Image (cartoon, rainbow, N blue to C red; front, side):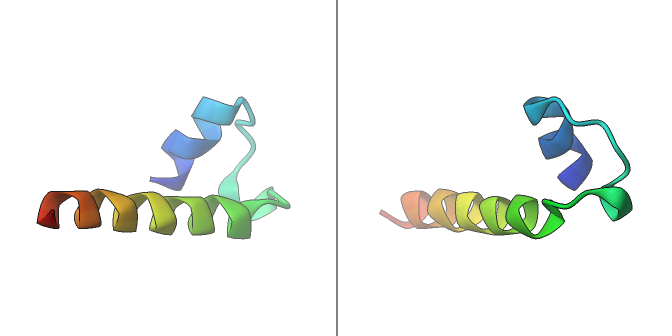
Length: 41
């Protein structure tokens, strides 16, 4: 999933070599939580 996010922001470097891996993960988790909460309402 992180590779899909990396493609969207235009940085195709390997996830292991990126400085923003933590930020990508945080954004993914927040987006998934928001989707889950929207399903419950």
